[in-house]
Image (cartoon, rainbow, N blue to C red; front, side, top):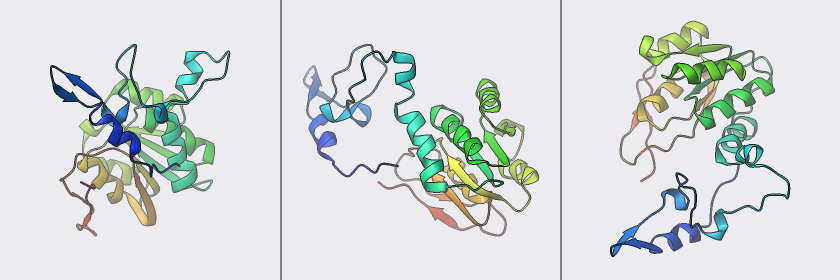
Length: 201
């Protein structure tokens, strides 16, 4: 996993672009819903000649973030149980990494049926629909006593709290989702009920 310590890019992009005299900021200095973008050179990686866009897209932050969170931070051992909250690009990468790590049970949680279906194809052994009932209870029904590792890839205080709530004693939660500043999240498990943390401002 790579931790960004150079804030120079963020500072440079603050006053770089304007529309009608008003400052316009790019999300994380990049933003990506455009065919053409003006980005800081620090956000660019030269692609090898002959590499097409399809495989190159896998080198973006989704795959590397999800894989690194599992391989380098959570480090599940073969036979362990992993819960992944959110099956977007980051979460699906985490699901794959859990499978590669030899997790005996990989529980994927997402509201969208097509994402749960994709998670199944990529290695999830169980998928959970939050709309079907209490997520914590659903996961603990699959993994009595809790999971060894939980990966939160949504960015909501609710799912962050759930990630802590489903851990076994000594388990580890890794919160990847970018939550808005302010809201605190709490473990909802009856034996806990304490505030687990809050996002940095």
